[in-house]
Length: 178
Ligand SMILES: [Zn+2]
Ligand SMILES: [Zn+2]
Image (tube, rainbow, N blue to C red):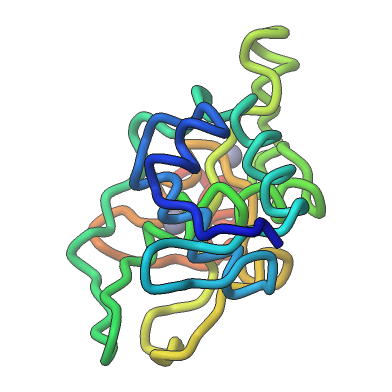
């Protein structure tokens, strides 16, 4: 653990991640997974936590510009209010998902690197599988079980008309094309 609690500003300065909301997302995940703890003035971070934040800096500018908007689907909790979008955007959960499932769309097989070359390599959306009705207040996302890499097209179809279609349903639509 770091000897002093770190504020958002200090974490930002030390890691080079400018986006405060992104840092908050990190910290939420790091606390839930035991890499950091919350104090009254900030967070105590393990070296591991800093390492994770540093490696995220490399892909920070690669964050999703245009994620499917799910902000109307809110979970009301005693202490927090979360959108499923937050699970899909959480950079830590994203990385764990990608480490396990790769960056190829699990529905259509689209691979950004193969189609657009080096600068697009590794780009992918991450979709949260579990419907909101199954998620309780204490829910902690499991990136391997609950998240899947999907290309923006397939992701859009999953959520089209406010639905949350299953991977299988969209695969089926893709094959039929009608
Ligand atoms: Zn796809
Ligand atoms: Zn999604």
